[in-house]
Amino acid sequence: MNIHDLAAEAASHWGASPLRLIRNRENAVFEVAMPERRAALRLHREGYQDDAAINSELWWCAALAKKGVSVSGALPAQDGRFLVTLSTGRKASVIEWVEGEALGEAGKPFDRPVEQIIAQHKSLGNLIAKFHSVTDDLVLPEDFIRPRWDKEGLVGENPFWGRFWQHPEATPAQRATLVAARKFLQDFLTAYTGKIGPIHADVLRENILVNDNSLSLIDFDDSGFGYRLYDLGTVLSQNLYEPAYAQIRDALMQGYGTADTRAVEIFTLARTCASVGWTMPRLEQGDEIHARHIARACMWAEKLFDRYAQS
Image (cartoon, rainbow, N blue to C red; front, side):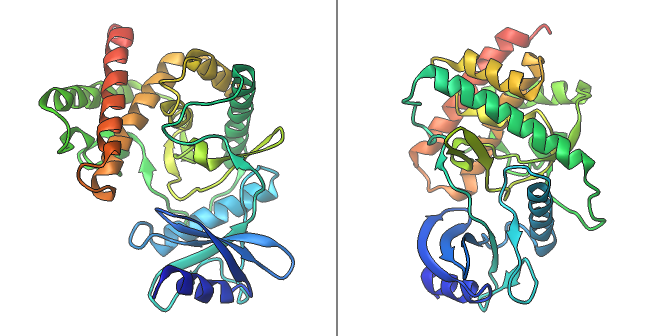
């Protein structure tokens, strides 16, 4: 069954009609028309998260939305379920529509005034702090389950996104740097005492929607239990080549309420390394994104080796 027919089958469970395909990557996402609103239909990537994990994500987002956090809450199907199994076995869910344009695009420099970029990242820091704080006040269901973005999930023997230090397209020198980066991160995380809790884990430009002066977070597909500052590191991983990187970093940290630059920058390294692992099972051999992610991780690792080797 093609993706559009599958979307039509899924939408019927909500009494909705597909309008357009928005993206078809990890999940296929469609804009759909419901009787009284627009919404976003997700066809979940097969084999990535099981039903319990997806239902936990949907519960969490609905709870955050009810508490006034700018995220997409889940909408129940006509039979009350948040997650539906389709005839092919693929899973589908529907979430509230969020107005706005993406903060930016991966690999493309910002093209707006630096003052605006700084203000937006301070607001983003506020938003991340709010959803972390609200999450801490929630009573998670006993069956709440999500992936782990802890030490094992990032730099253990089998990280959640793969053994980045063994990327087949890395040069020998790059592999040596990635091996050293893993050891550097392991040593840091062994001693680190910062808070672990549910995090978004994928706060990228494409997942931040801007509507006038307000920001919203979407796509909690990779959310899980992890170090809270990893969410800030993920933001910064896309800003390492920005001329205003230091200002963006400081604004994000100020908005979040942390002054621990060392930890934030080391969690930025953790994200750049994780992204190297992410490419391996998902992209074709020779895709330019492999080389770009490897180069970025190695560049940042070498900077941090010099900056924090003695700290």
